Amino acid sequence: MDWISFYDFKHSVIYVNARHRDVHYETIAKDIRDHVPSPAAQVLDYGCGEATSAALLAAACGHLTMVEAAPNVRAALKERYAGNPKISVLTPDEAKAKPDGSFDLIVLHSVAQYLNSDELAGMMATFRRLLKPAGTFILGDIVPPRMASVWAALALLRFGAANGFFWAAVGGLIRILLSDYFTLKKSHGLSHYDEAEMLARLRAAGFAPVRAGHNIGHNQRRMTFLAKLP
Image (cartoon, rainbow, N blue to C red; front, side, top):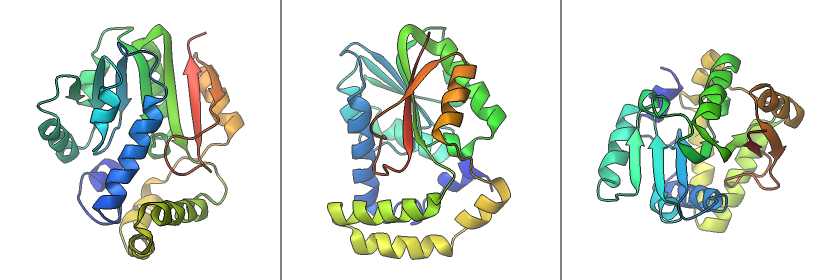
């Protein structure tokens, strides 16, 4: 099993219940929506997951292109949004084949931790090519190297308490301890970055980055970076 296979399988480890899943994606969609530069903007959400609130984001832009590597998740996205002409769902290879300068906004949220250094560098190079000259690349949910699991657990409990699934979140934390998640984490690892390191990586990839004041999503111990072409 790899990370794509793990997230392609429906289980109660990723989201503790349907309420958690839907509020999670609604929060992300609204946070990304705040960065859409105009109602005509072409937006790419790469590694979007189940994206149950993508229509909120699509309504704020010209067109939303979602990219998902997990086959079952991608098939479900295509079915869910088949009737929405403002949403397209692509494979990673299909996204890479898009013409240079196709997008005003490119988002890679909560994906970088599952990529090694070379994979992340390659993805940044692709996004630099696909971004319009005045566009923005958003790199979200970057996991810092210290106490990441502890802060993630606390953030989930706070999120659950605020949105009506606290006890389900408690149960979910117990289930994850008994799941394949930690076995996969040991075998494939997760990538962690501090602020200075990620800023340096973005600059090396040809971007002019800054750290955003607010991380996309519910975990404010993680980081979001806004990167433009110099």
